[in-house]
Length: 241
Length: 122
Image (cartoon, rainbow over all chains, first blue to last red):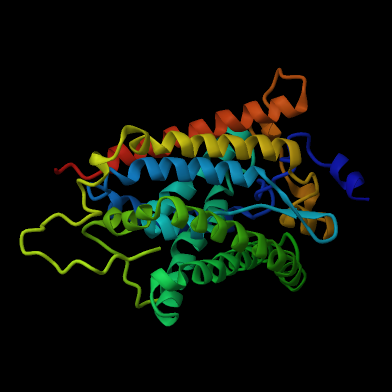
């Protein structure tokens, strides 16, 4: 029955990785999410401008390439459903919230512009739901957890795992709210459905995020120091977590 | 994982081991580690092309089950739809080509943006 639904889909519909396509959100909600994304990216550019450590530039590029590639790798979750990495918490932990936001924005923008994965009208929503939620919200949660759990060196992987899972569930919940406010589907239906599926997908996010951080810890632990120099003059306060 | 707490801080030791100069003293293969990172991403693209689940993802599944998948509008233009490079008949190769191009474009965009924003001092 799924294949029946698929054939009725517009021929350009992205498959298998699917971000929000145009038509899923109403124009006012899409515009609202564009506004929120422009504010977040604007802050990210302003905080990064002239303060980005040049040693972090190759890491930003490689991380963007890794996240793009990993987002192509849909993994199986229960019941004929797949999921893929978002990568926002991974980017935030390695680069901080601002450079991390720039990385996620570039990935989602290239996916929409070059690969027609995700609509243009809803691109702001896709950047916010899959990027900003993880790089800013997920990162704040990560920092708060590392404080609670006794320091970043000790708590890096468990804190990142919890933040990664939470970022996926929060992004899915936000997407459901946007769908509900757009009148696409009732919130009472969309919210439990999106949260349920993404509670499972979030486990994959946590596993991939901790595996990537564990690999870096074992091979290039010095890369963890870059985040503090990325922000330079302006660091994100962690007390707001 | 060893934290080397042995040496007392010397008043003459000004440069920390992980300070700004540390990266420049590394052998070139370590300074060019980002090439290795790109290679890892390319390997992931190949693995994704070969083994990624073809099942609908979380959002697509919810949209299908709750009857709003048909609201998806066609894109205004098509460059490389569905992560398959046009003109390549073999679906596996088409996905590998599209994914490799994509990771290079993403790397170039982000590295270019990073160069624009980097600190100008030192």
